[in-house]
Image (tube, rainbow, N blue to C red; front, side, top):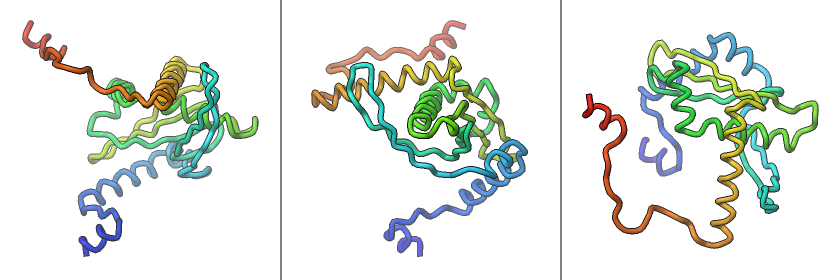
Length: 192
């Protein structure tokens, strides 16, 4: 059965993966903010939004929103145990560029909808993948420092993409040999 499902292009979850999924869904359902926020709106919304870059080039942005309910876009992130705390999630969000996602999605949405459906915030519902499946919530306001940093980054990313696409040169790692150093955390540990 498993082989037939895989051959048919189906994803098959293990019993453990299924238990984690059900635990996360129940946690979000039991969370008063998540259940209220996700009870109305549209899920898995595809958005295609044109953008004129500072260089004058046109690009068509595409995005897939977890949940749209103006004036807010919602996104669900499943994280490891302990990563739902503010300090841990801020670090994770920056490393994974969630601030870029938030700005990109808000701008793209606002670019294609009428004034009455504009969004003012992007909310992350963060659920830990181990019992007790703790839920935390983080908001990125449209004009916040976080959104503005993400906005600057995605515009630079799109300019770089357009440069590479036009030139046919897609930079990778530096040529030749690079000196290997110690990561900052290891250097601090050795200096203790």
